[in-house]
Image (cartoon, rainbow, N blue to C red):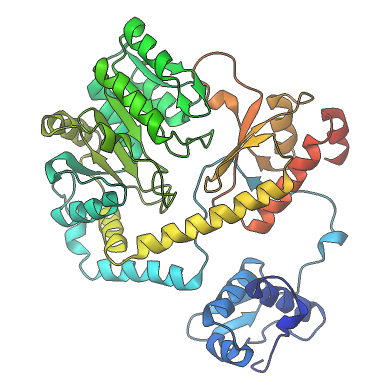
Length: 460
């Protein structure tokens, strides 16, 4: 059906959403039938006087809803009847996983196509990428890493720079070098669960330091250095997972001063460091001779891109680090490294990062609109919120309630290093879920937060 022409003036929603809505409406009203072909995207864009990208996003949105299907070389076709309106459905949540702290996934067709083109590019010289490579990354991969790290004011020599198969193997290798079983590692008192798991695997004692609104307390850090003789300090200093806290520059300088005074290495997990357009300088810039800097790509590009850029404190540190990583992982995947390099070189990585920033901000706005103010901590660009529960709820009761309706969140137990866990939980906003699904899940949670557990059970 090549003459379908929607009236976008009938909706005040974003135009691409309006296009998907009108497709659904016309299917429901019989104006579009199963098998009808929608107009080519460029033709419809010209007829409506809108950008091609708007039409493309509208068709993608309609495809996500199960309304249409795209056939390579043929076009876009109606595939089903429109779903029943929400009001006629029983009140029942679809499963929504808010437990994994993932970046929002790009859904802009132009950006996705640009990302896909890089696969074709590296595929033209695929065979060499299937071979064993020199450890730490090729010169081209290290050059790309230097370009990327330069955005954080980091300019390490290539002998101090490594391309590794993700942040986790890098952290495992670093801590295995710095400490032996039963040695003490310091961290935030509420910290990233991966650091807890690695410490447990290496049989290290992880001790949490008290925190305020600016991060760990430097005086408490100094006192712990004297009393506990720690082998390292682990920090996730920018958009910290899970509290979303960013340590300001003055506090970073104070922490680095204590670390230098007591000769304690800093392990800087900079997973989210690239998300803010402007953020405090990393510890690797403030105290490069003390800092093991880990810049993973999982949070600023995508979790499936298993690559991280590691800067070691000095050339001497590179020897044991290379040995530890080589023994555990042999090398970073040349395919992942080549893809990251291509995306950095041609600007696609920057485009992905801009999308993630914009979408993260939009999702945080949804959370601010729906959830009770004062109950949660968040940064306008973080992928999660840190939600404190009202007195009527315990974390186990609230998580049990949300899981009974398919909404997954994570309690504070997973993040607490020592002491009693807070009645709090992490709610993630990114990943593959749509804004509509996120909104629905948060609305359900807001309803529950306004009730007692007994009252909330009435609307399971």
